[in-house]
Length: 153
Image 1: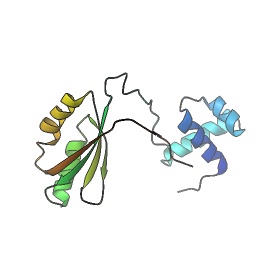
Image 2: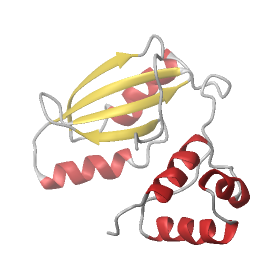
Image 3: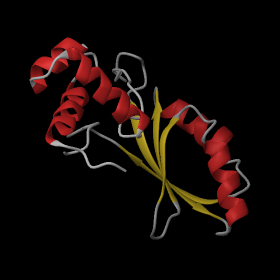
Image 4: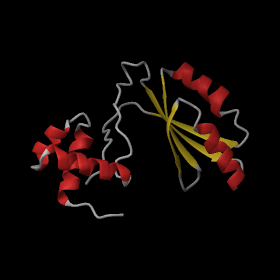
């Protein structure tokens, strides 16, 4: 991959703060005209530096205020079981993030629900009935201290 220059990094930083900036606004930030900014953005997208543009929603306002981190240990570690688990997880909407981790557990899930009853239903009917799951440990978030969606550049 091509090395990023200072202007590319400035563009990426600005977009992380506000992806709704226009090409003109971005051009003002990096001291270019809109056309080269447009070309740089297309290149950054094509090269995979920019995966997509999203809106960050307010979970409380959307009645998804319960945040749970759930550690999952598979019954056995092998490619078939891991593939089956990850295929299943990709289709469960309450799971917003899933990481394959090292240590006593195999996966760390980030889960958003409206409350304890919905989480219990999720656990019993969606995650707990997966044939590959051996153990589950849930950690409930009491308050969010820091949330950052960007990468420190």
